[in-house]
Length: 401
Image 1 (cartoon, rainbow, N blue to C red):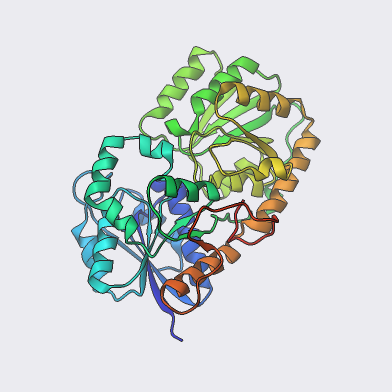
Image 2 (image 1 turned 120 degrees about the vertical axis):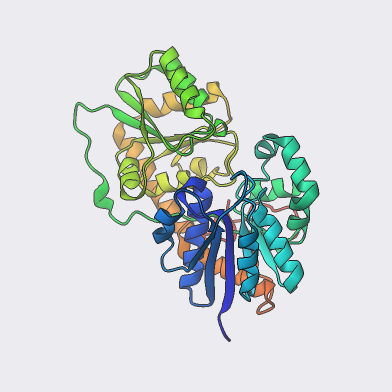
């Protein structure tokens, strides 16, 4: 049987898309490396697209210019490029942009199937942002695109439930995101005796990440012998608001903003930290949580993320959103000796290696593609009703906790 040709369609294939770009890239590379599917990536040109093309090696890349605001990504050339090649299926990553229109029109013209990965864009918190614009977009094109998908890809049971709550009854492929395991454990560098222990936030600096709650919690505790690094790209000017909160509480000596980091520098930062904190209001998966765990760092995050395994596996804290629960978790973490935090991190590293490595995840998605193309029966990870917790924890990437 010949290889099937799959087009990965995304508004941005550069680092400007944050976790969406990274998870789409790793999934595409994993599927492609399995040898059953041939993956081509199609996206829009932005200021980093050419610089970041190399990250997608060995996948062929097609980028197209867009007209008007980047948030819409209107690109007739992208639609024409998609139509010019006879793909067997399309996998759309992300919502609310012209790529959704292009995917739906392609399917209508060819009568071929497509998969949609919302990447958290149907979560209640996300839908409440720019709600009027999204209701209009849903009426004009996005609802039609989602309802026409052969299946919708959810990375957790939480996201699957929220897809149902948003009004979509498609079959759902329940497959988690993965994480690239650190290539060199030697990146762990011993901290000097007089250095403070480090708590790390690493993600987009965006209102949904809960950074103002984190600054307030840090202000209440003012932990001795700890520093907090807030790392990541600014979005919507939120960085200045967070810095203003730090200045207003005179926390400049404890909280710093190193900017953006990538690649090995990012891994070194994880590995040099004692604690990772992501106090988000909404995450469909939370790739940075998996990255931190893979580097042996215990995690504090909220119940707005699908990471109850932190508590179940003893590798972190899974708390309610808000300042008070964050204060309680931070105080507990700060009171632990470094060896106890390291032991929690080691359990987290084992968890990620067991359940969130990309190889099995790529195989699971390949089975989904084979199913929508009529090459095999429906895989177990594709569900048609309210998802429920598995009876055993297992290691199958088709059954994320």
